[in-house]
Length: 215
Image 1: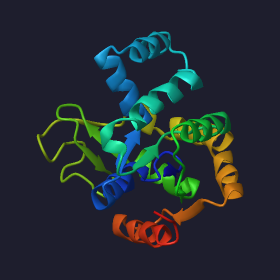
Image 2: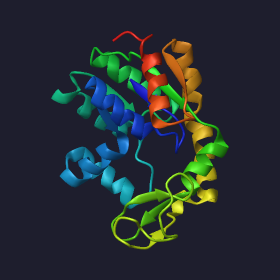
Image 3: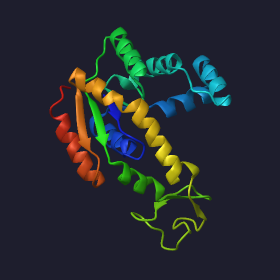
Image 4: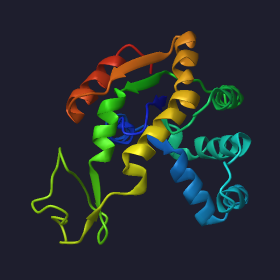
């Protein structure tokens, strides 16, 4: 399966819950890239060169990394792609890859959250400079303003959690990734999920949607 949704939609949280419940492996593009670079695999070395130059890793290289990952033993029980594909060309490459591996997608989950809610979720996040713990000024405020409950370290707002940066990320998503919703809707495998509510509420909606997807 593929999991779609804008930054701050809660995809990562729901992917881990699905992984625990169904045994399907969560496959994150970012995790694959970091591991390939750390392992210094041939593909990892190629990716590292682009990353060091601040350039986008080409689609064919990303697809090859995904191909390697999908052929590992732990994917035999199923997998959930999180962060790939991001564009229509990547989706077309994924279709070709799955055909080559004699696999197919059972479905695509699109977690939908209004822009205002996403900005509220992300802009309120604070990170501890000392231990890296996360909290939220609205949903999970620290006992003392600016101080980490866990270790007493200083809390700060990361650059990518600032409202202007979030707005830019959402614009990129709308331009590149949102068209995938129509792409998979045309294939008849899209399931749209309301991503507003508690983690359990969203999880329940996903499980209900999965009931209509062949496994």
